[in-house]
Image (cartoon, rainbow, N blue to C red; front, side, top):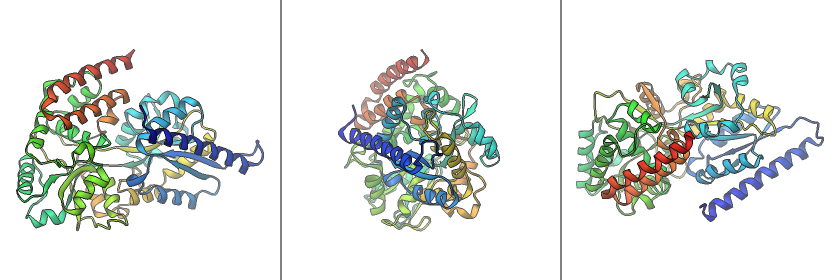
Amino acid sequence: MLNLFARTARCCCLLALSLLAACDGQERGQVEAPPTSVSLLHYFTGSLSGGIDEMGQAFERQSGVYALKAVSLDHEAFKTSIQDTLTAGNPPDLYSYWAGARTASIIDQLAPIDDIWAQAGLDERFPPALVKAAVEYQGHKYLLPLTQHFVGFFYNKHVFERHGLKPPATWAEFLAVCEALKAKGVTPIALGASDKWPAQFWFDYLLLRTEPYAFRRALMAGEVRFDDPRVVAVFARWKTLIDKGYFNRQPHPNSLAWDSGANEMLYRGEAAMTLMGTWNIGYFNNDKHRWEAGRDFDFFPFPIIDPDLPKVAMGPIDGLILPKRAANPAGARQVMVHLAGVDAQQAFSRGSGALAPNREVPDSAYSGIQRRVRDEILSSPVFTFALDLSLPPPVAEVSLNAIADFLAFPDAYPQILRQLADDAGKRFAGKRE
Protein backbone atom coordinates (compact mmCIF):
# COMPACT_ATOMS: atom_id res chain seq x y z
CA MET A 1 0.00 0.00 0.00
CA LEU A 2 1.29 3.42 -0.84
CA ASN A 3 2.38 5.52 2.11
CA LEU A 4 1.04 9.00 2.74
CA PHE A 5 3.99 10.62 0.98
CA ALA A 6 3.49 8.64 -2.19
CA ARG A 7 -0.26 9.35 -2.25
CA THR A 8 0.38 13.06 -1.70
CA ALA A 9 3.06 13.11 -4.41
CA ARG A 10 0.71 11.40 -6.84
CA CYS A 11 -2.02 13.95 -6.19
CA CYS A 12 0.43 16.82 -6.59
CA CYS A 13 1.71 15.31 -9.83
CA LEU A 14 -1.78 14.90 -11.30
CA LEU A 15 -2.72 18.43 -10.22
CA ALA A 16 0.45 19.85 -11.76
CA LEU A 17 -0.18 18.09 -15.04
CA SER A 18 -3.75 19.40 -15.08
CA LEU A 19 -2.49 22.93 -14.47
CA LEU A 20 0.03 22.57 -17.29
CA ALA A 21 -2.74 21.55 -19.65
CA ALA A 22 -4.87 24.48 -18.52
CA CYS A 23 -2.01 26.93 -18.93
CA ASP A 24 -1.28 25.59 -22.38
CA GLY A 25 -4.91 26.14 -23.34
CA GLN A 26 -4.70 29.73 -22.14
CA GLU A 27 -1.53 30.28 -24.15
CA ARG A 28 -3.15 28.93 -27.30
CA GLY A 29 -6.13 31.23 -26.91
CA GLN A 30 -8.00 29.47 -29.71
CA VAL A 31 -8.73 25.76 -29.74
CA GLU A 32 -7.59 25.45 -33.33
CA ALA A 33 -4.15 27.03 -32.67
CA PRO A 34 -1.27 24.54 -32.47
CA PRO A 35 -0.09 23.78 -28.93
CA THR A 36 3.20 25.43 -28.03
CA SER A 37 4.07 23.58 -24.83
CA VAL A 38 5.08 19.98 -24.19
CA SER A 39 4.61 18.47 -20.75
CA LEU A 40 7.17 16.06 -19.29
CA LEU A 41 6.81 13.94 -16.15
CA HIS A 42 10.24 12.79 -14.93
CA TYR A 43 11.99 11.23 -11.93
CA PHE A 44 15.26 13.21 -11.96
CA THR A 45 14.88 14.58 -8.44
CA GLY A 46 16.90 15.09 -5.27
CA SER A 47 20.35 13.53 -5.45
CA LEU A 48 19.52 12.28 -8.96
CA SER A 49 18.54 15.67 -10.39
CA GLY A 50 21.95 16.55 -11.78
CA GLY A 51 21.84 17.49 -15.46
CA ILE A 52 18.08 17.86 -15.93
CA ASP A 53 18.13 21.66 -15.63
CA GLU A 54 21.15 21.91 -17.91
CA MET A 55 19.40 19.76 -20.52
CA GLY A 56 16.27 21.93 -20.30
CA GLN A 57 18.33 25.07 -20.78
CA ALA A 58 20.04 23.57 -23.83
CA PHE A 59 16.60 22.80 -25.26
CA GLU A 60 15.37 26.35 -24.66
CA ARG A 61 18.39 27.77 -26.47
CA GLN A 62 17.56 25.73 -29.58
CA SER A 63 13.78 25.52 -29.73
CA GLY A 64 11.95 28.55 -31.01
CA VAL A 65 8.54 26.87 -31.06
CA TYR A 66 7.93 24.69 -28.02
CA ALA A 67 8.26 25.29 -24.31
CA LEU A 68 9.14 22.23 -22.24
CA LYS A 69 7.09 22.15 -19.04
CA ALA A 70 8.53 19.57 -16.67
CA VAL A 71 7.03 18.06 -13.53
CA SER A 72 9.39 16.07 -11.31
CA LEU A 73 8.43 13.25 -8.97
CA ASP A 74 10.31 11.05 -6.53
CA HIS A 75 11.42 7.69 -7.99
CA GLU A 76 9.09 5.50 -5.97
CA ALA A 77 6.07 7.77 -6.38
CA PHE A 78 6.81 8.00 -10.10
CA LYS A 79 6.49 4.22 -10.52
CA THR A 80 2.87 4.44 -9.36
CA SER A 81 2.01 7.78 -10.97
CA ILE A 82 2.94 6.63 -14.46
CA GLN A 83 0.46 3.77 -14.09
CA ASP A 84 -2.21 6.12 -12.72
CA THR A 85 -1.92 8.69 -15.51
CA LEU A 86 -1.76 6.07 -18.25
CA THR A 87 -4.80 4.27 -16.86
CA ALA A 88 -6.76 7.49 -16.36
CA GLY A 89 -6.07 8.51 -19.94
CA ASN A 90 -4.57 11.90 -19.04
CA PRO A 91 -0.82 11.35 -19.44
CA PRO A 92 1.73 14.08 -20.03
CA ASP A 93 3.16 14.42 -23.53
CA LEU A 94 6.37 12.68 -22.48
CA TYR A 95 7.61 10.51 -19.62
CA SER A 96 11.13 9.74 -18.58
CA TYR A 97 11.46 5.99 -18.09
CA TRP A 98 13.96 3.23 -17.58
CA ALA A 99 14.88 1.17 -20.62
CA GLY A 100 14.37 -2.56 -20.39
CA ALA A 101 11.61 -4.53 -18.72
CA ARG A 102 9.79 -1.47 -17.35
CA THR A 103 9.34 0.06 -20.78
CA ALA A 104 8.43 -3.35 -22.19
CA SER A 105 5.71 -3.74 -19.54
CA ILE A 106 3.73 -0.70 -20.81
CA ILE A 107 4.50 -0.95 -24.50
CA ASP A 108 0.83 -1.32 -25.44
CA GLN A 109 0.19 2.18 -24.09
CA LEU A 110 3.07 3.85 -25.92
CA ALA A 111 3.38 5.30 -29.41
CA PRO A 112 6.30 4.11 -31.54
CA ILE A 113 8.81 6.72 -32.65
CA ASP A 114 10.14 4.98 -35.79
CA ASP A 115 9.12 7.98 -37.90
CA ILE A 116 11.16 10.62 -36.10
CA TRP A 117 14.00 8.15 -35.58
CA ALA A 118 14.30 7.78 -39.35
CA GLN A 119 13.69 11.46 -40.15
CA ALA A 120 16.36 12.62 -37.70
CA GLY A 121 18.83 9.94 -38.78
CA LEU A 122 19.22 8.70 -35.21
CA ASP A 123 20.65 5.34 -36.28
CA GLU A 124 23.74 7.33 -37.22
CA ARG A 125 23.94 8.92 -33.78
CA PHE A 126 23.31 6.02 -31.40
CA PRO A 127 25.36 2.78 -31.22
CA PRO A 128 23.53 -0.27 -32.64
CA ALA A 129 24.04 -2.32 -29.48
CA LEU A 130 22.50 0.42 -27.35
CA VAL A 131 19.56 0.75 -29.77
CA LYS A 132 18.92 -2.98 -29.60
CA ALA A 133 19.10 -3.07 -25.81
CA ALA A 134 17.20 0.09 -24.93
CA VAL A 135 15.26 1.49 -27.89
CA GLU A 136 13.59 -1.40 -29.73
CA TYR A 137 10.63 -3.40 -28.46
CA GLN A 138 8.49 -5.78 -30.50
CA GLY A 139 10.15 -4.66 -33.72
CA HIS A 140 9.63 -0.91 -33.25
CA LYS A 141 11.48 1.96 -31.61
CA TYR A 142 9.84 3.38 -28.50
CA LEU A 143 12.46 5.02 -26.28
CA LEU A 144 14.84 7.92 -26.86
CA PRO A 145 17.98 7.38 -24.71
CA LEU A 146 19.11 10.30 -22.54
CA THR A 147 21.73 8.76 -20.24
CA GLN A 148 23.84 5.64 -19.97
CA HIS A 149 25.03 4.93 -16.45
CA PHE A 150 27.53 2.37 -15.20
CA VAL A 151 27.53 0.65 -11.80
CA GLY A 152 30.89 0.19 -10.12
CA PHE A 153 32.72 0.85 -6.88
CA PHE A 154 33.22 4.46 -5.86
CA TYR A 155 35.86 4.96 -3.18
CA ASN A 156 37.43 7.60 -0.97
CA LYS A 157 40.93 8.09 -2.36
CA HIS A 158 42.22 9.70 0.83
CA VAL A 159 41.24 6.64 2.88
CA PHE A 160 42.86 4.25 0.39
CA GLU A 161 46.06 6.31 0.22
CA ARG A 162 46.25 6.72 4.00
CA HIS A 163 46.33 2.95 4.40
CA GLY A 164 48.51 2.21 1.38
CA LEU A 165 45.74 0.47 -0.59
CA LYS A 166 45.11 0.21 -4.32
CA PRO A 167 41.85 -0.50 -6.16
CA PRO A 168 41.48 -4.30 -6.35
CA ALA A 169 41.14 -6.03 -9.71
CA THR A 170 40.51 -9.59 -8.49
CA TRP A 171 38.31 -11.08 -5.80
CA ALA A 172 41.32 -12.12 -3.70
CA GLU A 173 42.64 -8.56 -3.83
CA PHE A 174 39.20 -7.21 -2.93
CA LEU A 175 38.97 -9.43 0.17
CA ALA A 176 42.48 -8.38 1.21
CA VAL A 177 41.54 -4.68 0.89
CA CYS A 178 38.38 -5.22 2.96
CA GLU A 179 40.33 -7.04 5.68
CA ALA A 180 43.00 -4.34 5.81
CA LEU A 181 40.40 -1.58 6.14
CA LYS A 182 38.49 -3.43 8.83
CA ALA A 183 41.72 -3.90 10.80
CA LYS A 184 42.23 -0.12 10.69
CA GLY A 185 38.75 0.56 12.06
CA VAL A 186 37.31 1.71 8.72
CA THR A 187 34.05 0.24 7.41
CA PRO A 188 35.16 -1.30 4.10
CA ILE A 189 31.80 -1.11 2.30
CA ALA A 190 28.95 1.34 2.82
CA LEU A 191 25.55 0.04 1.71
CA GLY A 192 22.46 2.22 1.87
CA ALA A 193 19.49 0.07 0.88
CA SER A 194 16.50 1.80 2.46
CA ASP A 195 15.09 2.21 -1.07
CA LYS A 196 15.79 -1.50 -1.75
CA TRP A 197 17.13 -1.05 -5.29
CA PRO A 198 20.74 -0.20 -4.28
CA ALA A 199 21.31 -3.68 -2.81
CA GLN A 200 20.44 -5.46 -6.03
CA PHE A 201 23.77 -4.46 -7.58
CA TRP A 202 25.53 -6.87 -5.24
CA PHE A 203 23.37 -9.77 -6.34
CA ASP A 204 23.77 -8.83 -10.01
CA TYR A 205 27.54 -8.56 -10.05
CA LEU A 206 28.17 -11.58 -7.84
CA LEU A 207 26.09 -13.60 -10.31
CA LEU A 208 27.60 -12.03 -13.42
CA ARG A 209 31.14 -12.63 -12.14
CA THR A 210 30.52 -16.31 -11.27
CA GLU A 211 28.14 -17.61 -13.95
CA PRO A 212 27.84 -17.12 -17.73
CA TYR A 213 25.63 -14.27 -18.87
CA ALA A 214 23.34 -16.80 -20.56
CA PHE A 215 22.45 -18.21 -17.15
CA ARG A 216 21.47 -14.80 -15.78
CA ARG A 217 19.42 -14.12 -18.89
CA ALA A 218 17.55 -17.39 -18.36
CA LEU A 219 16.97 -16.47 -14.71
CA MET A 220 15.57 -13.07 -15.69
CA ALA A 221 13.26 -14.78 -18.21
CA GLY A 222 11.79 -17.15 -15.63
CA GLU A 223 13.43 -20.20 -17.20
CA VAL A 224 15.47 -20.89 -14.03
CA ARG A 225 14.25 -20.76 -10.44
CA PHE A 226 15.74 -18.40 -7.87
CA ASP A 227 16.58 -21.35 -5.62
CA ASP A 228 18.83 -22.85 -8.29
CA PRO A 229 22.15 -23.93 -6.67
CA ARG A 230 24.03 -21.31 -8.70
CA VAL A 231 21.86 -18.53 -7.24
CA VAL A 232 22.15 -20.02 -3.77
CA ALA A 233 25.94 -19.87 -4.15
CA VAL A 234 25.74 -16.14 -4.86
CA PHE A 235 23.95 -15.48 -1.58
CA ALA A 236 26.34 -17.76 0.29
CA ARG A 237 29.27 -15.68 -0.99
CA TRP A 238 27.46 -12.45 -0.14
CA LYS A 239 26.69 -13.74 3.37
CA THR A 240 30.41 -14.38 3.91
CA LEU A 241 31.10 -10.68 3.36
CA ILE A 242 28.37 -9.77 5.84
CA ASP A 243 29.64 -12.27 8.41
CA LYS A 244 33.15 -10.85 8.15
CA GLY A 245 31.81 -7.41 9.05
CA TYR A 246 32.73 -5.74 5.77
CA PHE A 247 29.39 -3.87 5.50
CA ASN A 248 28.08 -1.19 7.84
CA ARG A 249 26.11 -2.64 10.73
CA GLN A 250 25.07 0.57 12.47
CA PRO A 251 23.05 1.91 10.86
CA HIS A 252 21.86 -1.27 9.18
CA PRO A 253 21.83 -1.14 5.35
CA ASN A 254 18.03 -1.51 5.28
CA SER A 255 17.63 1.70 7.28
CA LEU A 256 20.33 3.73 5.51
CA ALA A 257 19.84 5.86 2.39
CA TRP A 258 22.27 5.43 -0.51
CA ASP A 259 22.96 9.17 -0.78
CA SER A 260 22.57 10.91 2.59
CA GLY A 261 23.69 7.70 4.30
CA ALA A 262 26.21 5.53 2.45
CA ASN A 263 27.70 8.30 0.30
CA GLU A 264 28.11 10.55 3.31
CA MET A 265 29.96 7.76 5.14
CA LEU A 266 32.43 7.82 2.26
CA TYR A 267 32.62 11.60 2.28
CA ARG A 268 33.40 11.67 6.00
CA GLY A 269 35.95 8.87 5.69
CA GLU A 270 33.96 6.49 7.89
CA ALA A 271 33.68 4.01 5.02
CA ALA A 272 36.01 3.38 2.12
CA MET A 273 33.81 2.36 -0.82
CA THR A 274 30.28 1.82 -2.06
CA LEU A 275 28.82 -0.03 -5.05
CA MET A 276 26.74 2.51 -6.94
CA GLY A 277 26.04 4.08 -10.33
CA THR A 278 27.83 6.92 -12.08
CA TRP A 279 25.23 9.35 -10.76
CA ASN A 280 27.63 9.37 -7.79
CA ILE A 281 29.95 11.49 -9.93
CA GLY A 282 27.34 14.24 -10.01
CA TYR A 283 26.65 13.73 -6.29
CA PHE A 284 30.25 14.19 -5.16
CA ASN A 285 30.93 16.96 -7.67
CA ASN A 286 27.98 19.07 -6.53
CA ASP A 287 28.21 22.39 -4.70
CA LYS A 288 27.74 20.76 -1.30
CA HIS A 289 30.68 18.35 -1.59
CA ARG A 290 32.96 19.80 -4.28
CA TRP A 291 34.96 16.61 -4.48
CA GLU A 292 37.22 16.25 -7.50
CA ALA A 293 37.27 12.92 -9.29
CA GLY A 294 40.76 11.44 -9.32
CA ARG A 295 41.83 13.53 -6.35
CA ASP A 296 39.17 12.97 -3.69
CA PHE A 297 37.22 10.01 -5.06
CA ASP A 298 37.47 7.54 -7.89
CA PHE A 299 35.93 4.32 -9.23
CA PHE A 300 36.93 0.78 -10.10
CA PRO A 301 34.86 -1.98 -11.75
CA PHE A 302 33.51 -4.93 -9.78
CA PRO A 303 36.47 -7.31 -9.31
CA ILE A 304 36.93 -10.42 -11.42
CA ILE A 305 35.98 -13.65 -9.65
CA ASP A 306 36.14 -16.18 -12.48
CA PRO A 307 38.76 -15.06 -15.05
CA ASP A 308 37.34 -17.44 -17.66
CA LEU A 309 34.06 -15.53 -17.88
CA PRO A 310 33.71 -12.64 -20.35
CA LYS A 311 33.36 -9.34 -18.51
CA VAL A 312 29.85 -7.88 -18.24
CA ALA A 313 29.15 -4.19 -17.54
CA MET A 314 25.89 -3.11 -15.95
CA GLY A 315 23.85 0.04 -15.49
CA PRO A 316 20.56 1.72 -16.35
CA ILE A 317 19.69 3.70 -19.46
CA ASP A 318 17.22 6.53 -18.93
CA GLY A 319 15.12 7.76 -21.81
CA LEU A 320 11.93 9.43 -23.01
CA ILE A 321 8.75 7.59 -24.03
CA LEU A 322 5.67 8.93 -25.79
CA PRO A 323 2.23 7.81 -24.54
CA LYS A 324 -0.40 7.03 -27.16
CA ARG A 325 -2.82 9.51 -25.57
CA ALA A 326 -0.40 12.45 -25.43
CA ALA A 327 -2.24 15.72 -26.00
CA ASN A 328 0.58 17.13 -28.14
CA PRO A 329 2.29 14.20 -29.89
CA ALA A 330 3.67 16.38 -32.69
CA GLY A 331 5.34 18.70 -30.20
CA ALA A 332 6.58 15.76 -28.14
CA ARG A 333 8.25 14.27 -31.19
CA GLN A 334 10.00 17.56 -31.93
CA VAL A 335 11.21 17.77 -28.33
CA MET A 336 12.61 14.26 -28.68
CA VAL A 337 14.55 15.31 -31.78
CA HIS A 338 16.06 18.26 -29.88
CA LEU A 339 16.95 16.14 -26.84
CA ALA A 340 18.65 13.56 -29.05
CA GLY A 341 21.09 16.26 -30.16
CA VAL A 342 24.66 16.78 -29.05
CA ASP A 343 24.08 19.97 -27.02
CA ALA A 344 21.24 18.58 -24.89
CA GLN A 345 22.87 15.19 -24.34
CA GLN A 346 26.21 16.78 -23.51
CA ALA A 347 24.55 19.10 -20.99
CA PHE A 348 22.77 16.21 -19.26
CA SER A 349 25.98 14.18 -19.16
CA ARG A 350 27.91 17.03 -17.60
CA GLY A 351 25.45 17.44 -14.73
CA SER A 352 24.53 13.80 -14.11
CA GLY A 353 27.85 11.98 -14.43
CA ALA A 354 26.32 9.66 -17.04
CA LEU A 355 27.65 8.97 -20.50
CA ALA A 356 25.71 10.52 -23.37
CA PRO A 357 24.11 7.81 -25.54
CA ASN A 358 24.62 10.03 -28.61
CA ARG A 359 28.04 8.95 -29.88
CA GLU A 360 28.56 12.31 -31.61
CA VAL A 361 29.18 13.93 -28.22
CA PRO A 362 32.92 14.72 -28.42
CA ASP A 363 35.50 13.05 -26.20
CA SER A 364 36.45 16.47 -24.86
CA ALA A 365 32.99 16.81 -23.29
CA TYR A 366 33.77 14.08 -20.78
CA SER A 367 35.77 14.33 -17.59
CA GLY A 368 38.67 11.94 -17.05
CA ILE A 369 36.59 9.64 -14.86
CA GLN A 370 33.79 9.54 -17.44
CA ARG A 371 36.24 8.58 -20.17
CA ARG A 372 37.50 5.70 -18.04
CA VAL A 373 33.93 4.59 -17.38
CA ARG A 374 33.30 4.68 -21.13
CA ASP A 375 36.41 2.59 -21.75
CA GLU A 376 35.24 0.05 -19.17
CA ILE A 377 31.89 -0.30 -20.93
CA LEU A 378 33.53 -0.57 -24.34
CA SER A 379 35.91 -3.28 -23.08
CA SER A 380 33.01 -5.41 -21.84
CA PRO A 381 31.43 -7.69 -24.46
CA VAL A 382 28.02 -7.34 -22.77
CA PHE A 383 26.17 -4.39 -21.23
CA THR A 384 23.10 -5.33 -19.23
CA PHE A 385 20.47 -3.80 -16.97
CA ALA A 386 20.20 -4.47 -13.24
CA LEU A 387 17.70 -6.97 -11.84
CA ASP A 388 14.78 -4.56 -11.42
CA LEU A 389 15.09 -3.41 -15.04
CA SER A 390 15.60 -6.93 -16.39
CA LEU A 391 12.62 -8.59 -14.72
CA PRO A 392 8.92 -7.90 -15.29
CA PRO A 393 7.91 -5.32 -12.62
CA PRO A 394 5.82 -7.76 -10.50
CA VAL A 395 8.74 -10.19 -10.35
CA ALA A 396 11.21 -7.38 -9.69
CA GLU A 397 9.12 -6.28 -6.71
CA VAL A 398 9.25 -9.64 -4.92
CA SER A 399 12.94 -10.00 -5.82
CA LEU A 400 13.90 -6.67 -4.23
CA ASN A 401 11.84 -7.57 -1.17
CA ALA A 402 13.66 -10.89 -0.89
CA ILE A 403 17.05 -9.14 -1.05
CA ALA A 404 15.94 -6.80 1.74
CA ASP A 405 14.87 -9.85 3.77
CA PHE A 406 18.28 -11.40 3.17
CA LEU A 407 20.06 -8.30 4.48
CA ALA A 408 17.87 -8.42 7.58
CA PHE A 409 18.26 -12.19 8.11
CA PRO A 410 21.36 -13.42 6.24
CA ASP A 411 21.29 -16.87 7.84
CA ALA A 412 17.82 -17.49 6.41
CA TYR A 413 18.84 -17.11 2.75
CA PRO A 414 17.99 -20.73 1.76
CA GLN A 415 14.39 -20.30 2.95
CA ILE A 416 14.18 -16.77 1.50
CA LEU A 417 15.28 -18.02 -1.92
CA ARG A 418 12.82 -20.92 -1.88
CA GLN A 419 10.00 -18.50 -1.13
CA LEU A 420 11.25 -16.10 -3.80
CA ALA A 421 11.41 -18.92 -6.34
CA ASP A 422 7.78 -19.82 -5.64
CA ASP A 423 6.57 -16.21 -5.68
CA ALA A 424 8.49 -15.33 -8.83
CA GLY A 425 7.28 -18.48 -10.56
CA LYS A 426 3.66 -17.53 -9.91
CA ARG A 427 4.19 -14.01 -11.23
CA PHE A 428 5.99 -15.23 -14.31
CA ALA A 429 3.13 -17.64 -14.93
CA GLY A 430 0.61 -14.80 -14.58
CA LYS A 431 2.55 -12.77 -17.13
CA ARG A 432 2.40 -15.59 -19.67
CA GLU A 433 -1.33 -16.19 -19.30
